Length: 282
Length: 291
Image (cartoon, rainbow over all chains, first blue to last red; front, side):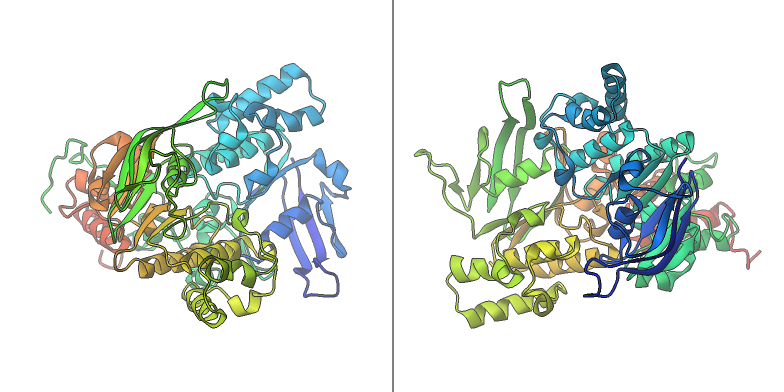
């Protein structure tokens, strides 16, 4: 359980030479919460995660983790962080060794390491590739590999920067559901940036950044109702979730509910509807 | 025009790390055609693309371009580099110059020996097409651009060559919805005359409406190749699962399976909305205002 608090944070990559990315920025993330961060390219998503992980230091303001201002070294024990490009983050030529690397640094016993590596690789569906060369993995598999590395560390906080942008449809949905389970079971704090609203809709809370300014902070379902803001952020409501308004008008869902395919198929389940294609006259 | 013939390929063959990535794959692109190549990660899409682009020599099978074998009997490769181009999944890998301008103009200046004014005109036109702020970024290092801008810069440098076949590996990764639509409309715009395109992508909803064919790979094999409509209506659960059809298509498919809609399975959200509205009305879920 890790809480994160940014108080009046000001950060600039070139202090004084350019507009700061964040100025007097406030954000509180409660322990055990899953927060999705959305916003156009260059809005500060990656910078925000780097600040939380202590990889960047603010010029003004403070960042409190579990109530204290910590050094990057101490933060390492609390949070695992991954970024979008997997190639830069893979350290070992062999898949299983790459997952083990972080665990070895944590000083775990070889037995524990083995158990955790196996479990993490199964989570991301790479167990069969444990003995493969990591450079033989595809882009999507490499992203799953570094995610396994982060999960294996079993820290109270996961900071994920667009972690699945190269992972294809179904496995992306599966991994997101898995993250949701882990997050709920372990009460892990999860901060997850993404370009896709469909990913962000799974989170408990959605934070939108535009040019370093917090422009939205509420439940994901509420953002769907703010069409103009969605557009301004360069996002698009997924086609299924977009049906929500029509369903709400028929009193089938709450106005701020996020509609999913499973949801709709349930609504359509009627005695006349079977998979052997029984026709109903309309 | 460009054809992969019975390709099989294994990484690090006869070592403990051996991995078969392609197993008897054949795929042909005809002039003017756009083919979407999709499938789960690790199914062999990128390797097939690299083989088609002539970057990787397949262990078995061959590649033909306009009827000519890329790998002749003398063992020399027949060069297609300016006619068949590949935009990699990692745009930063292709960058080598110190400024965006040098990077984007290199192929035209050095490769094709074009005049500076013509180079400038062509780059400006293509940049404008995909809303890449060339004038503003020309003197920056390509590596200092944001990932979305790097992707666009890589695309500009390749489109500038005016290739006959464009192969794009995940051109939309890391872009937001608006940028995705922009890149997709650029690709649609680019596809005219006899230019062909092979796009690797998993955002099927953005392609099903306009590509000619969809090829689906699973575990190194081509498990489906046909029109988007055929794919959307496929009754093979393995094909549907491997292709990861968008939820909106699955909804349309279910509506048809359940007899609520008689029209074809659609990937168009407005059409599916109408299909759903009809079904809901039929089930007695009326608009609250009406009840």
